[in-house]
Image (tube, rainbow, N blue to C red; front, side, top):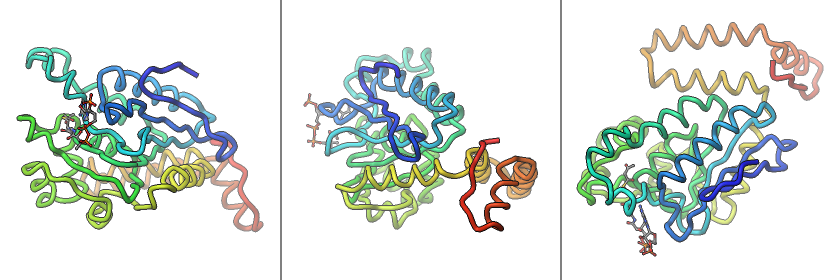
Amino acid sequence: MADYETITVEQRPEANGAVTLITLNRPKALNALNSKVLEELIDAFAAYEADRGQLCAVLTGSGDKAFAAGADIKEMSEKAAADFYLEDFFSPWTSEIVKKTRKPWIAAVNGFALGGGCELAMMADFIIASENAKFGQPEIKLGVAPGMGGSQRLTRAIGKSKAMEMCLTGRMMDAEEAERSNLVARVVPHESLLDEALKTAAQIASMPPMAAIANKEMVNAAFETSLDQGLVIERRIFQILAASEDKKEGMAAFVEKREGKWKGR
Ligand code: CAA
């Protein structure tokens, strides 16, 4: 496994070793996302995606206080507009991590998820939050605006009114409000966050792997297509899955009242 400076990656024992845990590891800087973190995250997610034995990943933050308190303001303060433009800053993270990761992954938000931290969490397939989690897009206070998808993903997740209020005031949303607003799937006690996220990841990793990818693809299509196009995508993927060995096994296992044994094909 690669040796990283700013993140750690672990193959967990859950689901017979099929769960990857990725931890942002700059606790002193509240896991702020600098270029190194993002470069390493891209690498770690690519390795997760490429490893057929890994079936679900969890991304969390180290320390007790933050998932990630945003893009690294100290690094960004040194950059000129031309640098951001010429490097197409933020683009590789959003496109690389989200588009190239077809397998499921969960964000386990253990504290502040602000700016780029909130945006990174929203790139996950879903968020499980500790009761201490706090979400926000406070970029306006820095004279800027979200740059890693926050204005789009937050608005799609919680609607215009709340997203607009959060972006315009920079106020934080606590875990209870985030669950009520559909930003997170579930809120759990702070101490059991990682256990709960890993348990959920193990549950997903024990599903037929092709069907997991397919389910993810279908749900995501709901955000990117019209209803008619989405329904066609759903039907086609369903029909492809119907030809899989795991479909035959899954249905036989149900009839024979036993657990399915998946081949991932
Ligand atoms: N970038 C760089 N360093 C950060 C950081 C960030 N986003 N957030 C926190 N830190 C650092 C602090 O500078 C501090 O470092 P030092 O000990 O060296 O001074 C350390 O982390 C601890 O932070 P605080 O002392 O500020 O901790 P606190 O408990 O008093 O406050 C906080 C916590 C409210 C989260 C506060 O740190 C904060 O407001 N952070 C910035 C949040 C923010 O504005 N995020 C958006 C960034 S812009 C962005 O993300 C753009 C985009 O869309 C991609």
